[in-house]
Amino acid sequence: MALNYIWFFFFIIAFAIALGKWVITGDPLIFKAVTEKLFPEIPPQHPAYGHMMMNFSANLLGLDNAATPFGLKAMESLQTLNPDKETASNAQIMFLVLHASGLTLIPISIIAMRASVSPPAANPTDIFIPCMIATFAATVAALSIVSIRQKINLIQPVILAWIGGISLLIGLLIAYLKIFLSQVQIESFSTVLSNGLILLIFLVFLCGGMYKKINVFESFIEGAKGGFEIAIKIIPYLVAMLVAISVLRTSGAFEFITDGMKTLFSYMGMDTQFVSALPTAMMKPLSGSGSRAMMVDTMTTYGADSFAGRLSAIFQGSSDTTFYVVAVYFGSVGIKNTRYSIPSMLMADLVGIITAIFVAYLFFGN
Image (tube, rainbow, N blue to C red):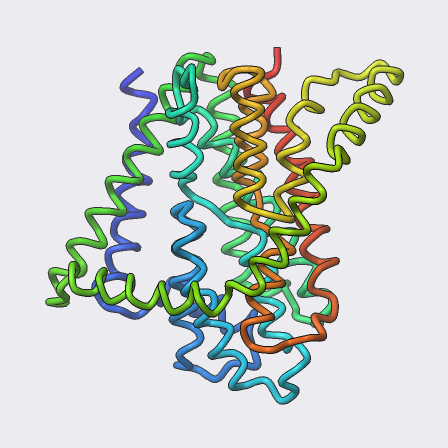
């Protein structure tokens, strides 16, 4: 078994070198070449790049609540470049759609919930790799959809290298897991990979702060103070969204839809295990807290290690909250015309849902 992890440690070393260079130098060169292609309207060295990178980094770590302050800062910076203050610019749409696709490397909050439900999951991290695959598919879909609308040429060496390289890596990972490892070994591998990345990223950022002589604790306190100001700013939009979501949840609409879909798929002779997890997928575009409640309810009802319980966790980690993001982020800068943002996000969400179902059957299907 130890020999099976050799290539993984080579990957960890390479990842540590790249991430360490980014943190210590303070210059995200590993992303700069791509972001300049995707955001041609933003001047080089503009503060918006830094805010967007911090937002994407928080999403990568599965810290969706921590991503909000950086996302709002990014929208404010992008708004300074927007000629029409009430209409979303191309850069704002690209950023928000990529953010809503929810690219997550380590779903920390989901793993924690799987460990805290009663009874807890035997191996809370076994959904790590499926989540990574589903969220990557949603992000690629979001990038492709918006690039077509904005006439951004994705057939460029640097973009193809990133997308193709990551796609190849994921493809090889799936092939390796399904060909060489048993189900028990896959779960063990997922645990080692997720725990190793969590520890690695924590150490790299801590060492980077020490190298740059940054007081990490004071920076944390300063960020916490800013969080209160942001919370007050977005409360009106949150209240409106939460009222609408509460009405939808209590009306029984989700139960009606899922029962109808289960009947339909049963009539077609298809497996219906995935239908029980669909309320999480349907709630996800509306509310992060609502979808978390649906996920916990699914795990409590069917079991955290059931197919539905695992799939609901993958749904939770495959995308972000579309309508919440649109209401809060665009509302915070006074944008009324969101153009094609919502349809693009929903299409990316659909790709993430379909991919989540596929990988759930691939990894956990009977």
